Length: 292
Image 1: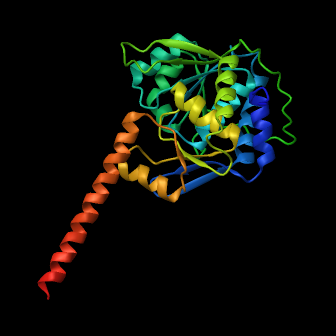
Image 2 (image 1 turned 120 degrees about the vertical axis):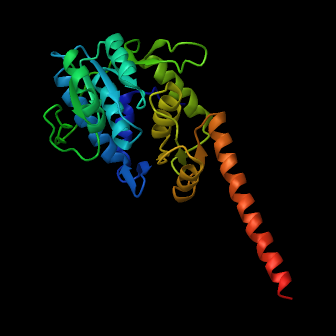
Image 3 (image 1 turned 90 degrees about the vertical axis):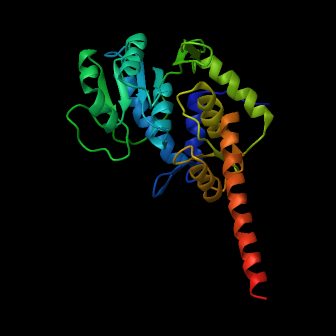
């Protein structure tokens, strides 16, 4: 029997797992691992901060950043606070970004120094406050930093109603212009609980997650469900064949959360590697034969 899923329950479980890896990020020249407890601590710090300011804000928080452990912590913290999360495509241009702010009514954005530099004028125009969530948190006059960790972070945040909105997002636009949609806390819980019952992975597994987290499928299936069942998330440095193969190999991946185009890219990378290996083997054989 699967217990009813809640964000508070997920954060409690993450805290209890301690040093068990939750997110492994393969950067361009480094590998960063966040433990389950570290992820929960970061999320709870943000959740308490956002909840304390709910009286000043309307409770809608945008998140504009690339896939990273900090992105995941920011998303978990926002949902735990009871705020509505508005994940924005990291590759959105200025026009798309401003349109997302206008349609969502967000008054706070969690973002990176790079995006902040490019969008500061838009943020000032719409009176949107910013909080930086990138790894190196240097002081910036246009943004405040991630709240410091507090002691005794008991999950005493009020649980949002099942039918309260949790996420405001947009379709990928494959059948026309992207369309906005809302997922409630009940929507999320129902999906996670159903996926738990399939038992396709567990705490000993590691799941490659190269899809952009602002989409609903990788958000619920690749992020929330894997964290719930204790599977570590492996984030590759990019979506190229070599980057995926490196994360697969070095991250000891046992599960892949993907779509057909991703599997095609992986197959192409494998075929290319096999073709090169065959050419080397053939060349070596011919060279050996010539020396006889």
